[in-house]
Image (cartoon, rainbow, N blue to C red; front, side, top):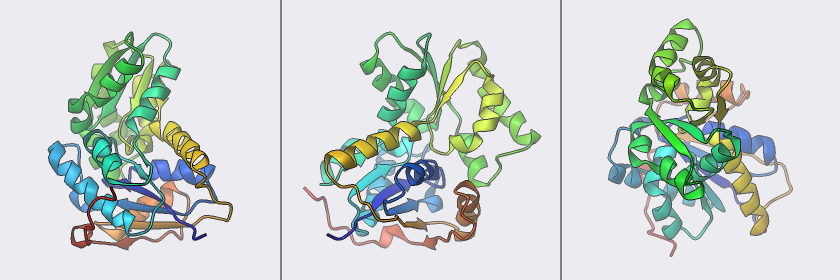
Length: 273
């Protein structure tokens, strides 16, 4: 039987946080990643636009004959997950439900913070998901779109970065949260600065961990797992050099290469079902 890859898609490099977790836990799986850097940030765009962009990425990955799709972007998950699940005949996994489950399993005082893009916060996707799972939880959301810009520019360390992160997260100081969801897949790349800003009494939750657990369960249930060593292919709609610099650092693969693609020109075959 032909080996099929798992597809990962994001607005930029942030989705590599899921790829990193997946590579660690699913080393036998082939993976294909597409980052739409040419059109980021998604978090400031209308939901309808994000859904259109998400479909273009999914369509590109579908032509790579993927067997499962991971929406490694909170904004795209909030805007497009139901549509993609309805249109594609393969498993489609987002990050908001996994992140919500992980947060509820972590909090002790039922006060959870969520930092994300403006689009994700305005959608109230996390607060609605957590309320559905636990009506007693209190969710405090804070938009931090500046973090995406910083990460895409590879500004992740140093005092200047810490000062900006401190200023942006200052509104959370009086929220009494004991758990903070990194509700954008870019944000784990700023883990050290974010943890310093909120202090040691707040536990950070990276939805990538729970999302890959969900992916593992789907692969097992549907008998899609493979046993031969996996490969990784990387694509970006933006600058290859900028993408490769961050990807090589984050994935600790100095020889990693990416290819630029124009997903707007991809043939659209329509939904699978």
